[in-house]
Amino acid sequence: MQKKTIALIAHDSKKPEIVEWAIKNKQVLSQYDLCGTGTTSKRISEATGLNVKGYLSGPLGGDQQIGALIAEGKIDFVLFLCDPLTAQPHDPDVKALLRIANVYNVAIATNVATANLVLKDGSL
Image 1 (spheres, helix red, strand yellow):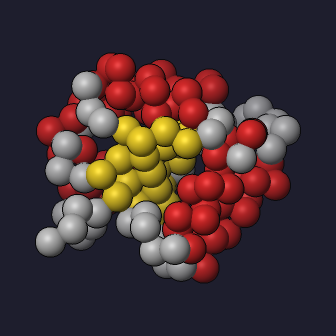
Image 2: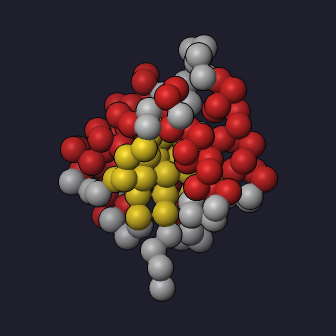
């Protein structure tokens, strides 16, 4: 059976939170193929020792790369820790990623509480 893939993305102010979450969930995450955008993937990999395939930074096209993988059926779950209080220059890309996840019925969590429920549920 092929491993399922989780995409990990976080806005700059949320990067410490996603790294902390990944450290706490390292054992569970090790059962999946992991990918993420630019700095987020690098920071998670460095903090956990997990292999996280990195794509471009979100504002430079990484969000769109993850969206393309969703459309190709290569992503099973997305954790995207968005900063709802800070305007993002690449907001259209963020909205497109959220939309494509919904179009293809891919679970997408925008906060740690939801991500914890998805992992705990075991339905991935």
